[in-house]
Image (cartoon, rainbow, N blue to C red; front, top):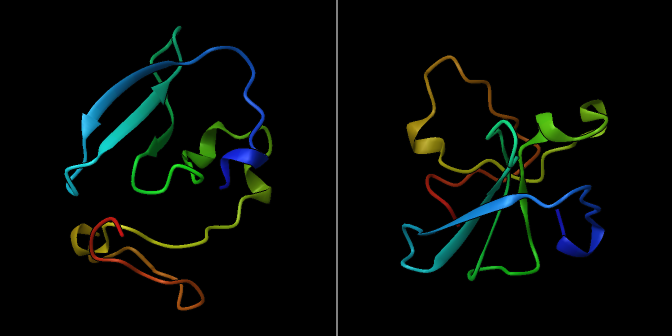
Length: 89
C-alpha cells in the first residue's frame, strides 16, 4: 500500500531493525496490545507493508505480491495472478 493512501488513527509505537537487505525497516505496532500493524523501510519509503487483519474492512484487501515464499508451508496456496518473491524484494 502506498504511504500516501494510508490514514492512521492514533499513534503507533515503532521498532527499527536491519532488514535482510541491510537497510533500515521500521515496524509499527499498537501501543496498547502490541499487535503488529505495518512495516516501512529505506528500500521503498513510499510503500508500506500492512497487516491486512488490522484494516477496518479486511474483505476489501487485495494483495499486490507475495514475499518470503521460500519459507511458505507446503499447504499455502499462492495466487498465480500476483508476483512471488522467495525473500523480500
